Length: 151
Figure 1 (cartoon, rainbow, N blue to C red):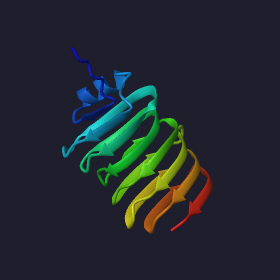
Figure 2 (cartoon, helix red, strand yellow):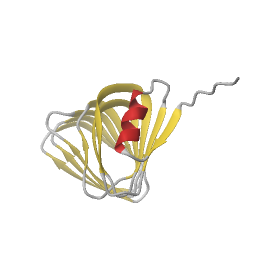
Figure 3 (tube, one colour):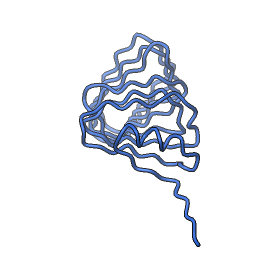
């Protein structure tokens, strides 16, 4: 008898997302959906999990702490990052990310060539890195300690 344990999960529904977050073996979690839905990631410590969001029509509200969060595709409306100390990698063509006043991000990295992102920073961001040619509109009412442009 062979028992295999996978460390990656691809989810498409809120219920699958919540079940995968409870699985201690998951290291890579991919939220992949074409549905126009709002996903809410519950508060929790998921420091051993790399989250990838590949959902071009979805809005995501994150309350959890992850090793990394990579946005491949997200609805143009809004993605809200409610947690503290996350590394957010924006590898999508476009999107709108809000960092509320009571949230804080370790770093936001814009890595997609020719991306068009709107960042609303109401909370604290230690660093914003722009590593490719991109159009990044930053609406700042919070605090950003450092901005690096390397394109």
